[in-house]
Length: 161
Image (tube, rainbow, N blue to C red; front, side, top):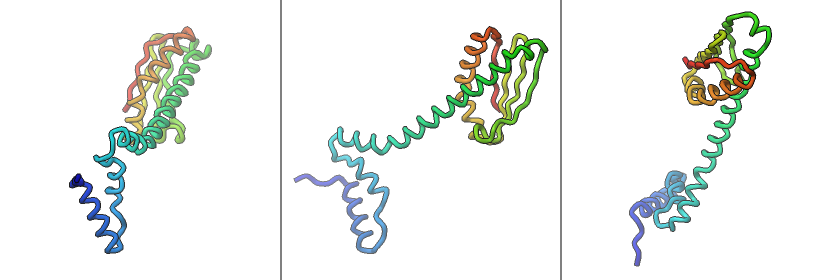
């Protein structure tokens, strides 16, 4: 006869106690049931995947949204840098408050010269600063490629503060 694992016994005792005393079932124990150590490995993997899937989907959606945002910023900055009026009038320094729906509490400072393009993102909130910082490489790559294709290549530097 096979004896139940100690963790399984504990869950059963908690449920019995909660049932007798009118309390709610232990939700952590219920979540643990989905990953029962006695289940076959394939079944445990399926259950774990079902629990993790919503998190992965949300993370993937957020990642896609931010990558698209960086492409949007790159396209608009490259468009500005390649404008004939901008190219004819020397060095530029611009400070823009970004749309609250895109990056709340964030200001973009752009410095453009004949050889260099420097962007500085100033974010009020640490989570926005971290979000931009994690995706700077996407923005840098997009900008460098767009500027090269538009025949206005510049040395690109990006700072997040």
